[in-house]
Image 1 (cartoon, helix red, strand yellow):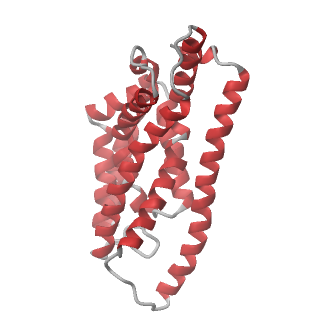
Image 2: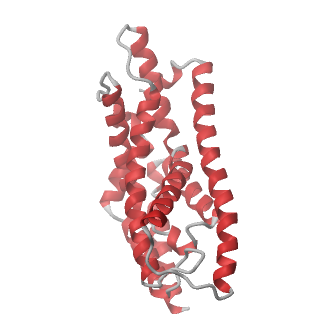
Image 3: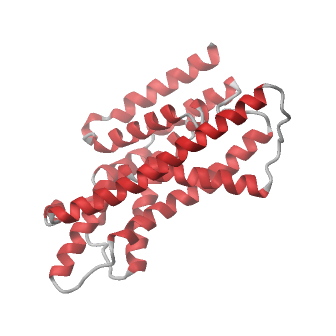
Length: 257
């Protein structure tokens, strides 16, 4: 299956990399601009402006859009290897006269999974906000919540479900082999299934955004880098075991301090 990637022409690789880079850059630019705008709102809140505890439908929609864009910026870079594999297989199929759908459909399916996750993350944030568990900076305002987020992420790192999903993300070719079908629906469906494994690998880690701040760009970048490294490191390194116990230990310290 790795031969699929080598079958890509340089122009194919350049176009895919450029297209995904532009999408990711626009997502991060949006987050940067939004962070600046929200910093001003936070300053107003700190000076005594009243805060509404229950979101309006429009506020929920805007927050959902923010989460969806953030997931694109965070997770699309980690899917580059799978995208290249799909594009390579599509190139081989085209040379045999049985072309597959454009690679964009595969990416769309992957993004749809994380868009669905964004809806649930928005609902969770709305609940935490309503109960006063988040600060104006959208970070944990409760030591118990912060410790719980760290503990949940640490424990999940040690589970077999994490191992299964991470193995797929580290070697997507093993899963994608033999599952390619023609048509846009087939390509999008394959992207959804790949995204499902990616979601299973990282969904608890995304909860840590509530620890350091949902709009803390440095914290977002740190989690993105960790997820990327986790997928790139060889499975024999068992990095999840180390980080899992570190998170559990941090949870104990967080609640103790």
